[in-house]
Length: 264
Image (cartoon, rainbow, N blue to C red):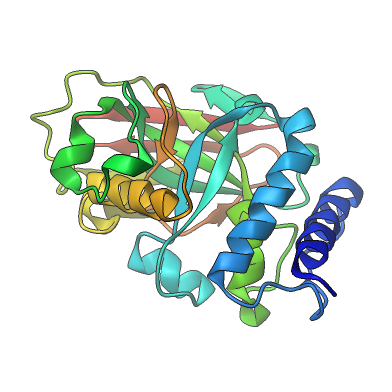
C-alpha cells in the first residue's frame, strides 16, 4: 500500500471512531504509524477531516511535558496536537458529559500569542519565545480518550489521534505576567471540594516557556509556524482526572488565578 494511502486510511479510521463514539482501539497494523513522523502525518490528515465540525485551527496543545503525565501513558517525551476554535471555552463553563465517551480534564498554564513565531527564525529558546507571549492563564484541557486501556497503549496512535484533545477551558488572562515566577507557581486541582492533584509550573519541561519553545521548534521541523493570537497549552502538571455528570472542578495556581468547570 502506498504511504499516502496508508495515511489517508488511518485518518479515516480515526474519524470513524469519533463519529461512532466507539471505544478507543489501536489502528490495524497495516495503517498504524511506524514512527513519530508518520504519526504527525496522520494527525494532519485527520485535522483536515475534522475542521468542518471543530472549526479553524486556534492553537496547539503540548502533551507529556511533565513526568506525571509521561508515567501515566508510558511515553517519555512530549508531543503536540491541535486546538480547534469550536473547542475553546472561557471559565466558568458547563460541559455535557454525554458529549464524550470518557471525559478527562488536565490542569495547565496556557499562553496566548501576540506575535508569530516563524519556522524560519528558529531554533527558539525560552527567551526568544517570551517576546511573543501576550498573556498567561490557568486552564483545563478537555481530554477524550474514548475509554482507552492505558495498560495496553501504543502512544504513536494517540499522537495520530490529535493527542486526544477535546477542547480547552481558559481562565482570566494575565497580561502583566513577566515578573511572575512561573516555575515555582503552585497549582491545585479540586473536584467536588476534595483535593485531586497538585503540581508546579516548572513541572512542564522545567518552565512553561521552555515547553512553548519546544513546540515552536517541533512545528518548525515540519515547516509550520505558530501564529499571532494562537493559544498554546503548555502541558498538564496534574495527571488526567476523569469526570462524571455532577462534578464541580477547579484549578487554582499561585498568582494566575482560577479556572472552573462544571459537568452536567
